[in-house]
Image (cartoon, rainbow, N blue to C red):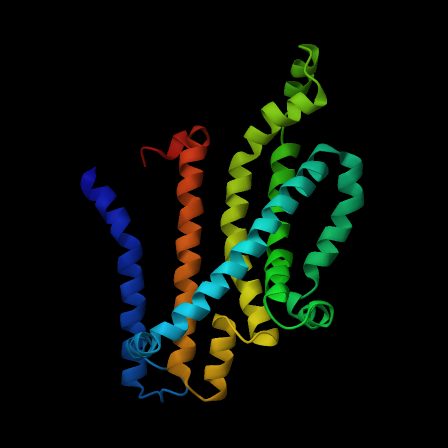
Length: 256
């Protein structure tokens, strides 16, 4: 049992190391120029060489991402609760939400720049716009899957619609909610980096754009690796919170 557990914990590291080894070998075997595709070792070395600048830009990207994500969580939970608890609101809001989510967010960045100027605010708003939709959908789905029979029983016992929503609906929707957070946080990074490449003078996106203009591809890939690491860390944070908060929904997987 312990061997299986240790193997499961080691599997992500083994797969990551294997990917880097394959990447390194392909570049060296086919003699691919660094300005086309650098080796991971070269990208890591350049990342360490510019670690002060990368750290500063990474902190800014993390700040804008978390700020936009936090707004998305509040907005997504409120709107998801409204959509999931009312069929009329669902019918009215669903086409608008789907249509808005279909719009490429990079197309909205110039509009945000016209409204708020170049800098942090467009990045935060872009991170919010690209990450709130999964939260709305999952919260609404979690509330909508509450069995009608259970609602009828609770109402017969004197529970109000508000009581059912808060005491039964929201707890039942928690697995859906945490699943959406893991998706939304990765999308929030995408949104902030998109905005930084278009309308910012700070952040990992701006660093990568500046490096690519100088054909410094190792630094570009170092920025990509930093974003990937931040995304993985934040995903795992919410994964841990989910496992601890919704153990009742994962009992079947505890012994596997």
